[in-house]
Amino acid sequence: MRVISKSGEYGLRALMYMVAHREEGVFVSIRDMAEHLDISFHFLTKILQSLTQAGLLKSYRGPNGGVAFNISPEKVLLSDVVRILEGDDFFDKCLLGLPGCGKLAPCPMHNIWKEIKGALKHEFETTSMAELGQAALLNRIGLVS
Amino acid sequence: MRVISKSGEYGLRALMYMVAHREEGVFVSIRDMAEHLDISFHFLTKILQSLTQAGLLKSYRGPNGGVAFNISPEKVLLSDVVRILEGDDFFDKCLLGLPGCGKLAPCPMHNIWKEIKGALKHEFETTSMAELGQAALLNRIGLVS
DNA sequence: TGTATTTAGGACAAAATACTCTTATATATT
DNA sequence: AATATATAAGAGTATTTTGTCCTAAATACA
Ligand code: SF4
Ligand code: SF4
Image (cartoon, helix red, strand yellow):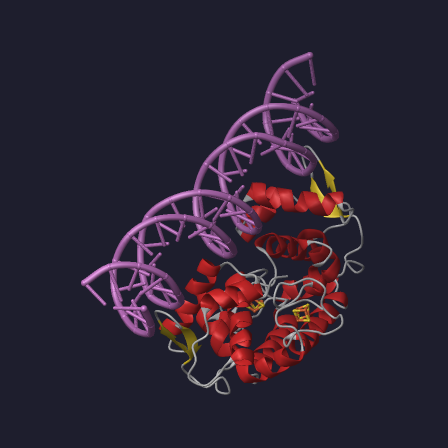
């Protein structure tokens, strides 16, 4: 059961890292993140590029360069991140892979799925990256317990 | 957001079809199902083979052959099906793709995910294929509304 | 017995996802 | 200006998932 893709996972873990390690006016090195989080540097770079292009992050090239939040992490919702990295229809998917959930004459799975999906969407839309970052400070980021 | 794979989707849709169309002592043709549900015949055959090998279905070769429930659909839970088709650890996965959810020192996503996953698991473990089949009789199976 | 039908099973191919590598561009420092 | 460092961007490779095809085995029926 994979809910978010590897891209989504890596992106979220990187943003958690950034929140936990941010300093005002300092860009976080992608290479450092990749090493600390054990993610392929080039792959992570691409993922973060998507977030930069979407306006969520800003980047800076050259020595001491890196990425930083362009929007305050208090205002960045989990749902914003997954919508950018996994597609805008992330929360509109059907359990059976068919499009158009919630319309007339739903299939037998509809009621089951409606509840679950609603709960997931609600959680993602009421949790900010800042909150996740705070929690990350208490534990070891992105590591299994 | 794909929760179940294509294999799982096809398997569930086929079982719903079987419940809705079952007659005592009659095997349901895989080819008929594949056509009605618009699923590749060979692919569906393999998926149903897994369910047969797991003992959930029984099959019969030759004219008027096909597959039938080996276990009464009232006793077949949704969770049984996905565990067979997607792996026994289906409900043990982490939102971030890391193994071992629910242990000490959880990551920041843990509380969010724990609730959602618990709800999903509960729904799947309290819904039988018979129930889904009943609902399927009322609507059009596996079709989007 | 021979033929048609239907699942079983494995090899193969296509598509999607995940990951790697190379080159270009921007910036800082000397 | 020259060099080192870092992200941007796109091409290329690997792995997994999904789908196709061919042959074998079982069964029914003429
Ligand atoms: S009605 Fe059923 S098949 Fe259709 S989108 Fe909703 S859950 Fe999926
Ligand atoms: S604690 Fe977090 S990272 Fe670990 S398994 Fe649970 S949700 Fe995943």
